[in-house]
Amino acid sequence: MTYHWYDFVGNIGIVFILGSYLLLQMERLSAADWRYSAANGIGATLILFSLYFAFNLSAFLIEIAWLFISFFGLFKAFKSRG
Image 1 (cartoon, rainbow, N blue to C red):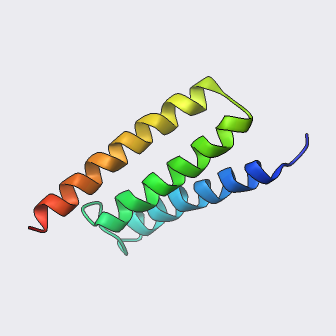
Image 2: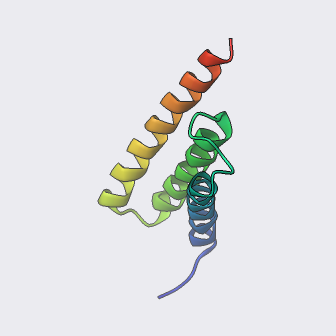
């Protein structure tokens, strides 16, 4: 297996998603906080970018869903702020 620069970009995306989930479980971040949804959206975007170079349909579909759910969370968080 060859490790490419776009794999590194995807791995940074994984760090964003897992890091935000860890902070959520540690109660250091709320699911209603815009930063939680933003971190998940950034993570999904980075993973999708890496999938452009090495496509996998299942991973693509889950990351598209993750991205749209993150957009919904951001919309909801900013709407509740006023």
